[in-house]
Length: 226
Image (cartoon, rainbow, N blue to C red):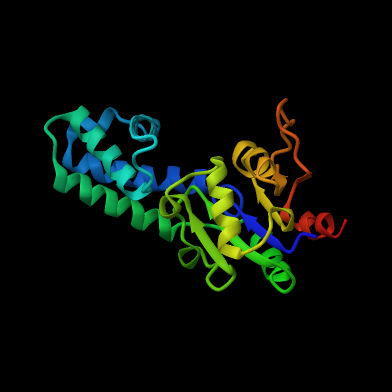
Protein backbone atom coordinates (compact mmCIF):
# COMPACT_ATOMS: atom_id res chain seq x y z
CA UNK A 1 0.00 0.00 0.00
CA UNK A 2 1.35 3.40 -0.98
CA UNK A 3 1.81 5.74 1.98
CA UNK A 4 4.69 7.92 0.76
CA UNK A 5 4.71 10.31 -2.21
CA UNK A 6 7.79 11.89 -3.71
CA UNK A 7 7.22 14.78 -6.09
CA UNK A 8 9.58 16.21 -8.65
CA UNK A 9 9.88 20.00 -8.53
CA UNK A 10 10.76 21.75 -11.79
CA UNK A 11 7.95 21.60 -14.37
CA UNK A 12 5.92 19.47 -11.96
CA UNK A 13 5.06 21.84 -9.11
CA UNK A 14 6.14 25.05 -10.89
CA UNK A 15 6.96 26.11 -14.45
CA UNK A 16 10.74 26.13 -14.28
CA UNK A 17 11.33 26.73 -17.99
CA UNK A 18 9.31 29.94 -17.91
CA UNK A 19 11.05 31.20 -14.77
CA UNK A 20 14.50 30.30 -16.11
CA UNK A 21 14.02 32.12 -19.40
CA UNK A 22 12.64 35.26 -17.75
CA UNK A 23 15.52 35.31 -15.27
CA UNK A 24 18.10 34.71 -17.99
CA UNK A 25 16.63 37.54 -20.07
CA UNK A 26 16.99 39.94 -17.13
CA UNK A 27 20.55 38.72 -16.59
CA UNK A 28 21.36 39.22 -20.25
CA UNK A 29 20.21 42.84 -20.01
CA UNK A 30 22.57 43.30 -17.07
CA UNK A 31 25.42 41.62 -18.95
CA UNK A 32 24.98 44.05 -21.87
CA UNK A 33 25.61 46.92 -19.45
CA UNK A 34 29.13 45.55 -18.95
CA UNK A 35 29.98 44.00 -22.32
CA UNK A 36 28.86 45.62 -25.58
CA UNK A 37 29.66 42.37 -27.41
CA UNK A 38 26.75 40.77 -25.56
CA UNK A 39 24.29 42.69 -27.73
CA UNK A 40 24.32 39.77 -30.17
CA UNK A 41 23.70 37.15 -27.51
CA UNK A 42 20.31 35.57 -26.90
CA UNK A 43 18.79 33.66 -24.00
CA UNK A 44 19.24 30.51 -26.06
CA UNK A 45 22.99 31.21 -26.20
CA UNK A 46 23.10 31.37 -22.40
CA UNK A 47 21.16 28.11 -22.21
CA UNK A 48 23.56 26.49 -24.68
CA UNK A 49 26.57 27.52 -22.57
CA UNK A 50 24.90 26.05 -19.48
CA UNK A 51 24.20 22.78 -21.30
CA UNK A 52 27.76 22.57 -22.59
CA UNK A 53 29.23 23.10 -19.13
CA UNK A 54 26.87 20.53 -17.61
CA UNK A 55 27.87 17.97 -20.25
CA UNK A 56 31.57 18.57 -19.63
CA UNK A 57 31.17 18.31 -15.85
CA UNK A 58 28.69 15.44 -15.90
CA UNK A 59 29.43 13.10 -13.00
CA UNK A 60 31.87 15.49 -11.34
CA UNK A 61 29.72 18.50 -10.40
CA UNK A 62 26.12 18.26 -9.18
CA UNK A 63 25.84 21.64 -7.47
CA UNK A 64 23.62 23.65 -9.80
CA UNK A 65 24.65 27.06 -8.52
CA UNK A 66 28.30 26.28 -9.27
CA UNK A 67 27.30 24.93 -12.68
CA UNK A 68 25.43 28.13 -13.46
CA UNK A 69 28.47 30.18 -12.36
CA UNK A 70 30.68 28.12 -14.68
CA UNK A 71 28.19 28.76 -17.49
CA UNK A 72 28.43 32.52 -17.02
CA UNK A 73 32.21 32.20 -16.98
CA UNK A 74 31.95 30.35 -20.30
CA UNK A 75 29.75 33.07 -21.76
CA UNK A 76 32.13 35.84 -20.68
CA UNK A 77 35.10 33.97 -22.13
CA UNK A 78 33.32 33.93 -25.48
CA UNK A 79 32.97 37.71 -25.31
CA UNK A 80 36.51 38.61 -24.32
CA UNK A 81 38.78 38.41 -21.28
CA UNK A 82 37.66 36.29 -18.35
CA UNK A 83 36.12 38.26 -15.52
CA UNK A 84 35.45 36.14 -12.39
CA UNK A 85 33.93 39.03 -10.36
CA UNK A 86 31.45 39.81 -13.15
CA UNK A 87 30.58 36.14 -13.54
CA UNK A 88 29.88 35.95 -9.80
CA UNK A 89 27.77 39.12 -9.99
CA UNK A 90 25.73 37.74 -12.88
CA UNK A 91 25.27 34.42 -11.10
CA UNK A 92 24.01 36.08 -7.92
CA UNK A 93 21.68 38.33 -9.92
CA UNK A 94 20.27 35.37 -11.89
CA UNK A 95 19.70 33.26 -8.77
CA UNK A 96 17.99 36.13 -6.94
CA UNK A 97 15.64 36.65 -9.88
CA UNK A 98 14.97 32.96 -10.38
CA UNK A 99 14.16 32.20 -6.76
CA UNK A 100 11.99 35.32 -6.47
CA UNK A 101 10.07 34.56 -9.66
CA UNK A 102 8.79 31.03 -9.00
CA UNK A 103 5.10 30.65 -9.83
CA UNK A 104 3.37 27.50 -8.66
CA UNK A 105 0.94 25.71 -10.91
CA UNK A 106 -2.62 26.33 -9.66
CA UNK A 107 -3.06 22.70 -8.59
CA UNK A 108 0.15 22.48 -6.53
CA UNK A 109 -0.83 23.96 -3.17
CA UNK A 110 -4.33 22.48 -2.82
CA UNK A 111 -3.19 18.97 -3.75
CA UNK A 112 -0.10 18.99 -1.51
CA UNK A 113 -2.15 20.29 1.39
CA UNK A 114 -4.86 17.68 0.89
CA UNK A 115 -2.51 14.73 0.49
CA UNK A 116 -0.30 15.85 3.37
CA UNK A 117 -3.01 14.83 5.83
CA UNK A 118 -2.78 11.20 4.70
CA UNK A 119 0.63 10.60 3.11
CA UNK A 120 4.26 11.29 3.87
CA UNK A 121 5.17 13.94 1.29
CA UNK A 122 8.67 14.33 -0.14
CA UNK A 123 10.48 16.36 -2.78
CA UNK A 124 13.07 14.48 -4.84
CA UNK A 125 14.59 16.81 -7.39
CA UNK A 126 17.56 17.17 -9.69
CA UNK A 127 16.99 20.92 -9.47
CA UNK A 128 17.68 23.48 -6.77
CA UNK A 129 14.38 25.29 -6.28
CA UNK A 130 14.02 25.29 -2.52
CA UNK A 131 10.50 24.91 -1.08
CA UNK A 132 10.83 27.91 1.24
CA UNK A 133 11.57 30.10 -1.79
CA UNK A 134 8.53 28.77 -3.65
CA UNK A 135 5.86 29.27 -1.00
CA UNK A 136 5.92 25.58 -0.05
CA UNK A 137 7.56 25.73 3.36
CA UNK A 138 6.25 23.15 5.85
CA UNK A 139 4.49 21.11 3.16
CA UNK A 140 7.20 18.46 2.78
CA UNK A 141 8.21 15.88 5.34
CA UNK A 142 11.51 15.35 3.52
CA UNK A 143 13.35 17.39 0.85
CA UNK A 144 16.09 15.71 -1.19
CA UNK A 145 18.20 17.30 -3.93
CA UNK A 146 20.57 15.33 -6.12
CA UNK A 147 23.32 17.87 -5.44
CA UNK A 148 23.10 16.92 -1.76
CA UNK A 149 22.63 13.19 -2.27
CA UNK A 150 25.65 13.05 -4.57
CA UNK A 151 23.66 11.19 -7.23
CA UNK A 152 20.95 12.27 -9.66
CA UNK A 153 17.78 10.68 -10.97
CA UNK A 154 17.44 8.28 -12.77
CA UNK A 155 20.44 6.64 -11.10
CA UNK A 156 19.00 3.77 -8.99
CA UNK A 157 20.99 4.99 -5.99
CA UNK A 158 18.88 8.17 -5.86
CA UNK A 159 15.71 6.20 -5.19
CA UNK A 160 17.44 3.86 -2.79
CA UNK A 161 18.74 6.78 -0.73
CA UNK A 162 15.32 8.43 -0.77
CA UNK A 163 13.63 5.24 0.46
CA UNK A 164 16.19 4.98 3.24
CA UNK A 165 15.53 8.60 4.27
CA UNK A 166 11.84 7.87 4.84
CA UNK A 167 12.47 4.31 6.05
CA UNK A 168 9.86 2.82 3.74
CA UNK A 169 9.99 -0.17 1.38
CA UNK A 170 9.89 0.58 -2.36
CA UNK A 171 6.38 -0.84 -2.65
CA UNK A 172 5.10 1.89 -0.33
CA UNK A 173 6.45 4.80 -2.41
CA UNK A 174 5.15 6.58 -5.50
CA UNK A 175 7.02 9.16 -7.56
CA UNK A 176 5.11 11.89 -9.40
CA UNK A 177 6.73 14.05 -12.03
CA UNK A 178 6.94 15.30 -15.60
CA UNK A 179 10.06 13.38 -16.67
CA UNK A 180 9.50 9.84 -17.93
CA UNK A 181 13.11 8.70 -17.31
CA UNK A 182 13.47 10.41 -13.93
CA UNK A 183 10.00 10.14 -12.47
CA UNK A 184 8.55 7.00 -14.05
CA UNK A 185 11.00 4.52 -15.53
CA UNK A 186 13.75 5.08 -12.97
CA UNK A 187 11.45 4.79 -9.95
CA UNK A 188 9.65 1.76 -11.38
CA UNK A 189 13.00 -0.01 -11.86
CA UNK A 190 13.64 0.66 -8.15
CA UNK A 191 10.33 -0.94 -7.18
CA UNK A 192 8.40 2.30 -6.75
CA UNK A 193 5.16 3.32 -8.43
CA UNK A 194 5.86 5.80 -11.24
CA UNK A 195 3.16 8.37 -12.05
CA UNK A 196 3.62 10.62 -15.07
CA UNK A 197 2.33 14.19 -14.85
CA UNK A 198 1.68 14.94 -18.51
CA UNK A 199 0.24 18.45 -18.45
CA UNK A 200 0.64 18.91 -22.20
CA UNK A 201 -1.00 15.64 -23.27
CA UNK A 202 2.02 14.26 -25.12
CA UNK A 203 1.87 10.67 -26.36
CA UNK A 204 3.92 8.28 -24.25
CA UNK A 205 6.97 7.11 -26.23
CA UNK A 206 7.96 3.49 -26.46
CA UNK A 207 10.11 2.19 -23.63
CA UNK A 208 8.16 3.88 -20.85
CA UNK A 209 5.18 2.42 -18.99
CA UNK A 210 3.76 4.73 -16.32
CA UNK A 211 1.63 3.16 -13.63
CA UNK A 212 -0.72 6.11 -14.13
CA UNK A 213 -0.88 9.26 -16.24
CA UNK A 214 -2.20 12.59 -14.93
CA UNK A 215 -3.20 15.67 -16.88
CA UNK A 216 -3.29 17.66 -13.65
CA UNK A 217 -2.36 17.06 -10.03
CA UNK A 218 -6.05 17.32 -9.15
CA UNK A 219 -6.41 13.80 -10.58
CA UNK A 220 -3.80 12.35 -8.20
CA UNK A 221 -5.98 11.68 -5.12
CA UNK A 222 -8.43 9.65 -7.21
CA UNK A 223 -5.60 7.69 -8.83
CA UNK A 224 -4.13 6.88 -5.44
CA UNK A 225 -7.49 5.72 -4.11
CA UNK A 226 -7.89 3.37 -7.07
